[in-house]
Amino acid sequence: MVRGIHLAKIVHKGSEEARNELPALIEEAQRGRATIITRRGRPVAALVPLAEYRPNRSQQSLLSLEGSARGLWGKTSGTAIKKLRDEWSR
Image (cartoon, rainbow, N blue to C red):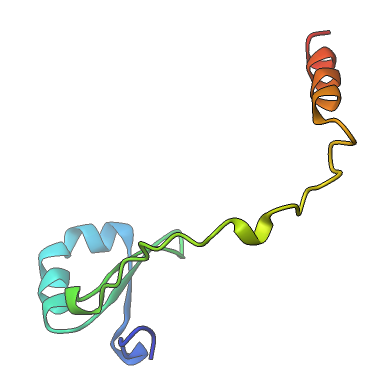
């Protein structure tokens, strides 16, 4: 089960087929069936019942990354950036 949706209920449709069958797919979503829409065989979107939709609104904190690039640009980042600018203006 994925987020309350039973995997047996998930149908895969190509984007063209999904476009042609959109009214029927919406009715199926109302009945609880999810549809994965693919493009060239790769999943690109999901049509899910609204009751199962859970937007990911909480952004993860960036505090865990604090200091993770320390020393990447040398002792003074300004000098490293100036060298990069000089390299591009040649």
